[in-house]
Every structure is written in C-alpha cells, then in structure tokens.
Length: 105
DNA sequence: AAGGTGACTAACA
DNA sequence: ATGTTAGCCACCT
Image (cartoon, rainbow, N blue to C red; front, side, top):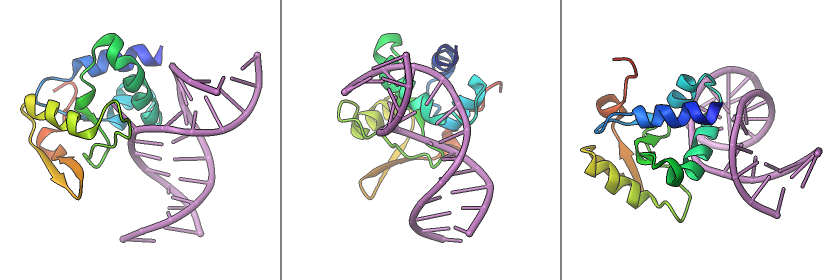
C-alpha cells in the first residue's frame, strides 16, 4: 500500500536531515503523488508518530496550512533535530542543499 | 457509494 | 519570468 511505504520512508529519514514530498513520493513508487504524502502525514503522523517536520516542499519551505500543525511548531521541531530553519517573509525556509536527505547514501 | 479537496510538483503558454 | 492545468491517492461529505 502506498501509504505504508510512505510511512516507512518517513520513519527512515535520519535526524538532522529533511526530505521533500516529491522525493518521498518517488521512493514510495509514485513520484507524482507528492500531495498524497502530505495527506498521509496529516492523518497518520499522530498514529505512527511520524517525524512529519522532516518533510517539506521542493523549495525547502514549510507549506503547512493546518492550524493543528502550525509552521512554527514544525520549525521548532526541525531545530530540535539540528536543522537550521530560517524565517523569510513569515515563511520558514530550510537549506535543502545542506540538509537535503539522500536516501541510500 | 461517488465526487471533491488537499501539507505537492512540473510542464505548458 | 509568472499563472494555470493535470496527475496522484487517501480522507471527508
């Protein structure tokens, strides 16, 4: 099941690293289902206790629109993980070139 | 049960 | 360069 793969992949993200939705979706077998990754995170993060904060969009910016999972909380969790999160125009930004997670490396 | 939305990405105009 | 459309799968109405 796609969701199960996504969950496993998310749990495979090492601390101090971040991955993009498209990257996780690609590893799950469906590169175009990036949005589905977000959906799964949104619903399953509380069930599987997933590090949802380590998953961001291609621009390395936090795109959470959920009031229950505010960007500020995600940024805090990322910094707790050792990831430097910058704040730009009210939006949090992470350097993917620096903290981008390379699976299988 | 079927249709629409959504924490996305990328290509086309 | 920016704006819109299309594709994906799970959850909600």
